[in-house]
Amino acid sequence: MSIEIRQAEPDDLEALVHLDFRNFGGVVEEGDVDEAREELDLDRFLVATEGGRLVGAAGSYAMDLTLPGLEMLSMSGVTWVSVAASHRRRGAAARLMAGLDELSAGFDEPLLGLTASEGGIYERFGYGVTTAIRVIELDRRRASIHRRFEPEPVELVDGQHHRDELFEIYDRFRRIRVGEVSRTPILHRIMTMDRKKPAFAAMHRDGYAIYTIESRWNDGHPVHRLSLTELVAVTPEAHLALWHLLLSVDLVGPIRSTRAVALDDPLPHLLTDPRALRTTDLNDGLWLKVTDPVRCFDARTYRADDRLVVGVVETVDDVRAGAEPVQTVVVGPEGCQEVDEAPDLIACRPALGPLLLGGEATGLARGERLRAEAEVLDRADVLFGTGVGPHCGTPF
Ligand SMILES: CC(C)(COP(=O)(O)OP(=O)(O)OC[C@H]1O[C@@H](n2cnc3c(N)ncnc32)[C@H](O)[C@@H]1OP(=O)(O)O)[C@@H](O)C(=O)NCCC(=O)NCCS
Image (cartoon, rainbow, N blue to C red; front, side, top):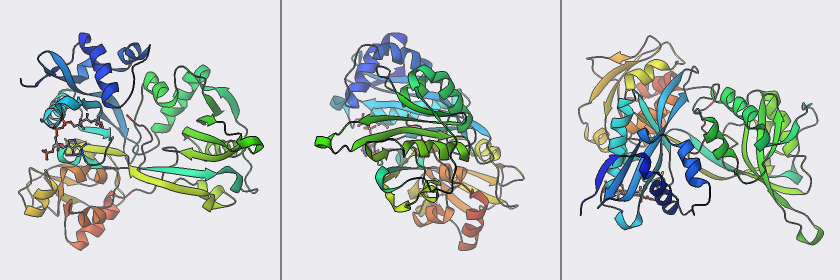
């Protein structure tokens, strides 16, 4: 029997939830299907079926991505990609991903983005690593906020009861953070809280921290573990106040975070002992596939009064083979458009995402995702570069 790909329909929802949870190693519980009904827009979903049975799915959220210059671009936030173990490696995911490209074009979205379960899947589909996710551990008892700072007060609340305020703060934050994406209120709740439990939250007028605590009494020598789900700060004052609070939670030993601390987070500069903050893992974060380079590069700002002509090829192999560009565009502060000129640099499609958000052209060239003379690479590093690096703390 062959695998068919088609648009998802409302009747697919229950099977879709069961397929997805099983493929990601989860168990469907009461309320999960209802939650998915609120969360997912099935017009943005495709399913793979065999003999009428659902064996795969892929979809997207309608998201806005924040670019250098703080312009927003509408993006297909690709999600729920999975194929049943019984039907793997028969090309279903590849066909679903191609179908999502078509849906995205139909929604007039000039790029697609995703956060990946594994690092080896998505470059072949045109996606490139654009931000990093840093896992940190911080021993609360070895460091505190330095005495010279005067943190503002924060309020301790149950996040479940303050969802609207937390969402409003997140929505302000993502508009000033290059690489961050919009969430709907329901997505925000799903990403930050377990709907069945109370959620510890610390709130400042311009930021919040959401965390859980696992008790470890150790026969009278308590070393509780604090897992920081999310820390969002619109201002430096909120960042300082929230970290001061987290470092004041008694009985806690390690504080762990998988996405709240960006690579260039100023936290080490605030601590009495910066070495107390350890990076325990560093992974790819947001992957981008730029399908309309003219619209994408036209929407961002640049750091130099320069222009570069970029020839776009599809794959890393095309860069190596010197393939003819499928599109040639001029980029820079004067605007971006298709041109009929010899390219200054050749970039494969997966390299366009990192260039769009400020990634280093020189590093991409070392990885053969881009080709240009050394002098052009220097100019590209300045032109595309940003001060604060891009970061996306939204797993989707
Ligand atoms: C990842 C997944 C969707 C792939 O589905 P699939 O239908 O087996 O993929 P395809 O057969 O279309 O494979 C397309 C290509 O990707 C490769 N590929 C697939 N899964 C891969 C993986 N996990 N790691 C590396 N390469 C992978 C295939 O080898 C194939 O390569 P080729 O084009 O060189 O032949 C499926 O294995 C899955 O559901 N995994 C668990 C859930 C998950 O991780 N989903 C991704 C969420 S971000």
